[in-house]
Image (cartoon, rainbow, N blue to C red; front, side, top):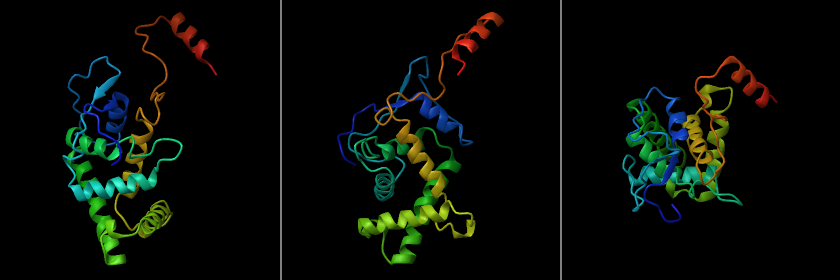
Length: 197
């Protein structure tokens, strides 16, 4: 992945909490106080903790194809796969880990059966065309066409983590507004009137 890794990469608490709502996995956030940020360390060496180096390379390539760098940052710049790796260690339950690992295995088997080679051995244009084909099949109305397990889930995780990252979207707010505590009816109605569209 390009760029230097920064120890203590910032990941918004909103991202972790929002992602946690979508699985049955429990979430453990020590030091989860009133701070706006939770520090999720990313290794300086770019080594993975949950994923093998081959799995990490495959996911990094997929993320870069899905969200390439243009005039805005891409998945490599937001370190999506390193953050996903850390979430696999600290956030994901066993079912989520199995689902992500099954995606990589399913993709690898599909590529080997189709092209008689490993995913990373394919030329980039072939990898791009392959992902476009898998994407179309996965989002079609014919579930039996889905060639790779859990593609839609992985795509959602990659896009969600990228677009809720500080680098890609510094102004992201999961739930607009502020906590006002115990309000009287008059105070509540005044806030509703003030924020009505």
